[in-house]
Length: 196
Image 1 (cartoon, rainbow, N blue to C red):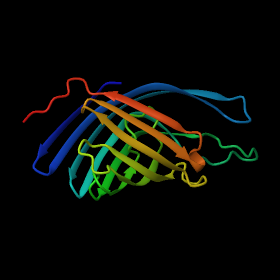
Image 2 (cartoon, helix red, strand yellow):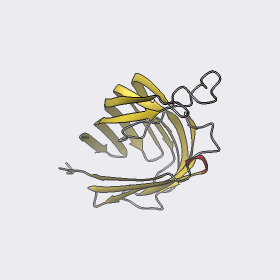
Image 3 (spheres, one colour):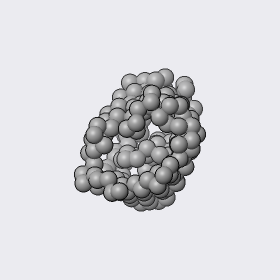
Image 4 (cartoon, rainbow, N blue to C red):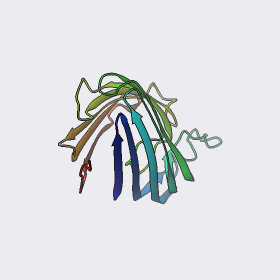
């Protein structure tokens, strides 16, 4: 879905505004039951982040027909959850960083997985480094808590690889409760330009 991003750099301050949208459909089949339900997903996601060399903070929201993966209560007498999905029209998005991402940084993200068609309502803690790169490249290793945090230490390894500041490659591999999870996000910044 379309996205708009504007970044302003003043001295050591970097301010980013992002507005993107998500649309799609999801079908849920209840295990041990013949019931299945279909849902339409539509949302817009405004987000604002300010970064300094040693810290960063971001806040935003996912507004619309939001559906996300949750731990659910077990249906009486069946041993299966009633649903693995939650629904709410407004989900908060948050980000905190301590340390220079170019060398070594600790990060916390809350529901901050954009662009992503079906958000996972989670807290994400990670440590990462750009190994001295000057182009925003970085690698992170982290753990997830929240809607899937009760399962066998879900963890991940991800990278952010910009190419000439217009093409972005973001591979992710999961471990433990996220084993066999492999994701590859590819994005292209149309009309990207630097204004002095």
